[in-house]
Length: 343
Ligand code: ATP
Ligand code: MG
Image (cartoon, rainbow, N blue to C red; front, side, top):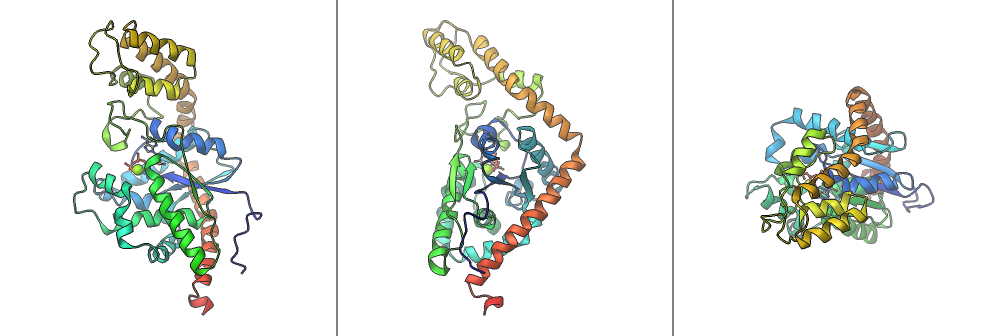
């Protein structure tokens, strides 16, 4: 085994994915799904359904049936936004025990303090009120993520901004491993979406599955309308004739992100700051833009939702295929570390 990573052997690879803890929303779309779709033919793309990670949260640990259902729902949402199941490999983390083996080896290369210093880990402890009773597995899961990335020898990791520290951790492990044991892995790079962190409909800095402030990709037209018409805007603006603030205003953040009609946005912003337009018009135009954007996604979602057994097959086949790839990485890793087979 050469152990040298040969970039000519295959197309460059993408690894990214989701934790099956709920449905996918506009934040996921703009943070990562959009790039997945855009780059799926340029890169060999692997999408992970990180079911083990879901067990790191007290909210889901006692509801495995919910996690299993979300695994299928989230795969459907990925297909609905336009990922091609023929060319994209979808896999379930728990189906690849080699990932856990790799994570164990990699954990030796990361200091305990470094693992705790991860800013996303700190944020999640705060945001999800985990207090000081989070599990050992919770602190370990960034290492699993490192193994997910390195296991398929990913070059690029399209993610929202909150995932950047995990990709940096993977980069550190790769550098350390390569310099200590010999070049095996490509150095992975994070690719952050057009909006790295989309705000919630309530103005919370993050649209989050657990925060009740999401527009889901498969929301019905009625749900979409009610969520948009009830959106948080400029709290200081009482009447349509009051000049309003555009910066940091969630309604305009969404317009900028999802309304392709830039002239319409410019006109709305211009009239908003002058106090010449009411919230209803601004929100109705946002609703129309989003409804047009989500229409085809909703239809494809329905198509796959009616074929859940086929979706399960996509996951089973993709997991088997990915397992072959990760198994090879594990062999190379153990070889370099002079473990049993290379004593
Ligand atoms: P959880 O609360 O269970 O962690 P989550 O909403 O953060 O759920 P993940 O499955 O952890 O979802 O994230 C999937 C991908 O979506 C990641 O790349 C993450 O960075 C991105 N993402 C999640 N929320 C947003 C958001 N509001 N804006 C941009 N990207 C996001
Ligand atoms: Mg998350």
